[in-house]
Length: 448
Image (cartoon, rainbow, N blue to C red; front, side):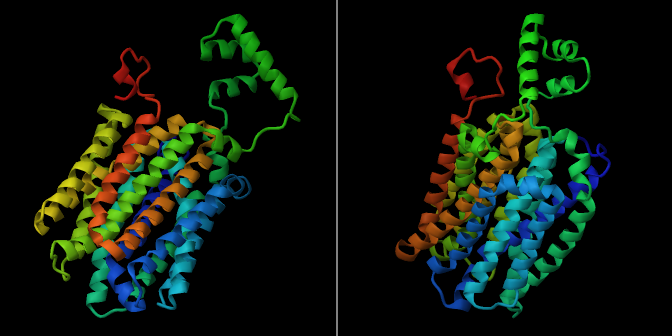
């Protein structure tokens, strides 16, 4: 696909990026508002972390029913359902009611984000320049997460109730609802040529064009006997529609790359959210940061992430390839986190946090471009929904664990937790086959 084929793709890409920006506004605020929410409800680190757990539950439920939802609703209705869940969340949280209601609201936003994220990731990954468009989407998310702490803390410092920040998000979610409806109306039909489930597109075309043998020979480059054998197999499959097929969810569950990618996203998002959500508390308590200006550190982290995604994703994907680039950025992230932990100076630590964000930024869009090459096309939506569910679970469980452990031993655990999670990311990534190399003549070709 391109921006002009189908014709509405330009509007769809823009709508996806705007939605990504609003998602960043939503996810970037809780970290900065954490002390305010704790004081407002008079609760501990461990209890306030329940908002992330509720969000994770929403993601997991969507993952469990991903194939059924995609089959019965289709792209347009699924996207509208996802944004509608976000509308419900912001309407529930903005009045600042009981904490239980706030937790329930975060469940709905997790559900909505899971649905939309899987759909827009798949859509953009099938574009002609997928790494660039994915960097726009996730760069937009980073931009939203950059300004979220500034806006939310500025409102609180001006004496405005913290929950009123979500009124802004409510208005934006209603806009996204209308924008997605206009952009993706008719998408189930005009994107159908790119939604085929068979990995060998040329063979599908051949079977329906009246000249299968000749076309298969040209497209696949096989000899006559091999081609006839394949044609007999395919014809038999077409003549026996009663053969029972496994569900897409069952196929995804049996797919090893699906689980490696899911674990990767689990550790990645757990580390990213833990850093973005707790680093300000770490700097306040252990580096004597200024409470009036500390939100700028969180914004610096997300700003670095945005800059990294928008400026580094495409050139690294082009010249080094996705696999090598992810390895480099993961090692860089671990290094900057280590410096943040070891250097006992708040200014230096703030700088290293921003540089850590720069290194983290390109990892997710690069991972998506590589992941879609590992996953069979017919299970891509289910597999990536499972991965995003794991990601949200990591983005909930590990910040929750940081809060729980900090309750007893202090917030110095933020950086060791991040380093451990990104080391686990690196391990999962190295276990995936190196598909960037067709010929592997040395042992290190399997890694680099």
